[in-house]
Length: 154
Image 1 (cartoon, rainbow, N blue to C red):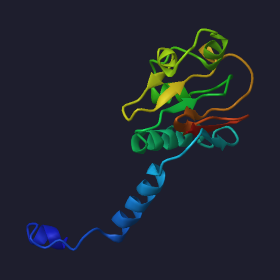
Image 2 (cartoon, rainbow, N blue to C red):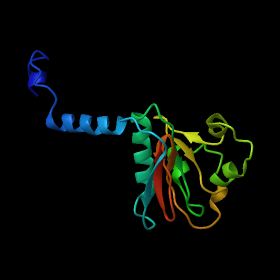
Image 3 (cartoon, rainbow, N blue to C red):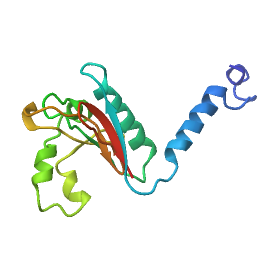
């Protein structure tokens, strides 16, 4: 307020909220070694998809040095790929069945991607299959376990 009132001549510095946000961002950007997973689990209808998409997007946006991939492990009702990139064509099962994958570049043709760089791999094509989870996996992303959503990173 003071800065606006003085047309930028007086700058009191960042607010407490801005300092706290900068500390959180710095903690997220700390270099990591290896692969890391974050899981988001819970009952149906509690917001697992929204949390996994949000956490994965934050990691992708702040961790440019890592690849963040959201993996929808809910083979029955997963909607993670439609939230992140509705044009996603590949599924988890198609990807794991492909014996010719040599690099991440081979994987990118089967995954979608959002504006902040979060990759997404859908669950079962057409939504059929059993029970599972949704999540995000990759350089600093997320991976799910049974009945939930999550994120993996490295």
